[in-house]
Length: 131
Image (cartoon, rainbow, N blue to C red; front, side, top):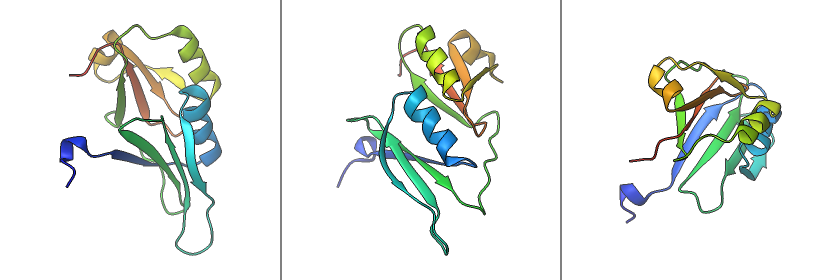
């Protein structure tokens, strides 16, 4: 059995606009599209799987007419980059539909940049390391 600490992590989020969300993560953050399933009638929703090769986690985007994105100020996805945030990366993210926002917790404004994705979910690019 894989130990929980070594298990792959999937983060799933609903999206109202699959194309905009996919563009944000691929063009803005440089993730790769690992698969996409178009929505069909019945119980199947539209899905997209995104990630970086070799990463221990991936993102699943779900578009379903019954699911609506309802992000809060604490729905944070934090990437610990261990260095200053590259302005070219931030410009690319903004061109791909992201927008810089102030963080609810001032810690993130001091130690990174908070970005709202096209659905309003928050991504923090942290200058810190983990752990």
